[in-house]
Image (cartoon, rainbow, N blue to C red; front, side, top):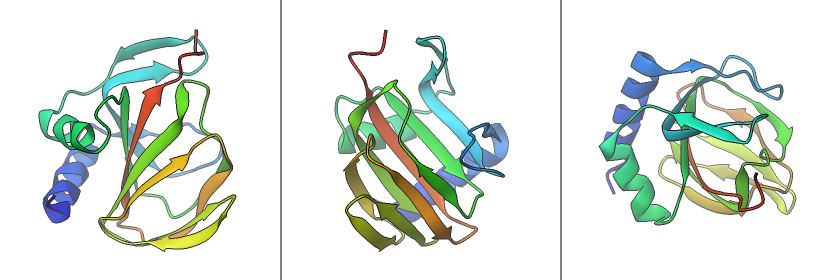
Amino acid sequence: MDFDKLYRHSKNLLTRHGKADKSSYVCDRCILWIGKQPLFTKCQEIQGHEDSYIKAIATEIYPDHDYILIAGGNTEIGMHRDASYAAPESISINLGGMAYWEYEQGCKWLKHGDITRFNCKKLHGILEADCDRIVIAIWKRNPKWK
C-alpha cells in the first residue's frame, strides 16, 4: 500500500470537501465521511462524499466495513469511546505525522502508515500529534444501533 499517495489523496479531500468536527472531545479538526455518514442522535444515515480510492483501501483493510471517516488538523483528541453507531472493532490508519495514542491497555507512538485494530468502546485518545497528521478511521455498523 502506498501510504504517501493515500496521505496526499486524503489531504486533498479534506482541503476540498472537509467540514469542521462538532465533537465535544476535539477542537479545530476537519472531517469527511466517505460513503455513508451516521447521524448520531437519530439512528439514521445520510450520504457522505463518494471516493472510490478511499473505499478500495478501506475494503482491503476491513472488507465488511460500513463507515469511513477521514480526519485531520488537530493535535489532541480527548479520551472517549466511539458513538453507538459503531461496532466495537475499529481500524485506523495513521498518515503523515506521528501521534501519541492512549488506550486502556497502554500508550504508543503511531507513525506514518501504522494500521491499528482496536476496541473503540474502550477509552482511547490522542495525547499529542504532529499538525500534519491525518487519520482514516473505519468501522462496521453496530447491529444494536436502531
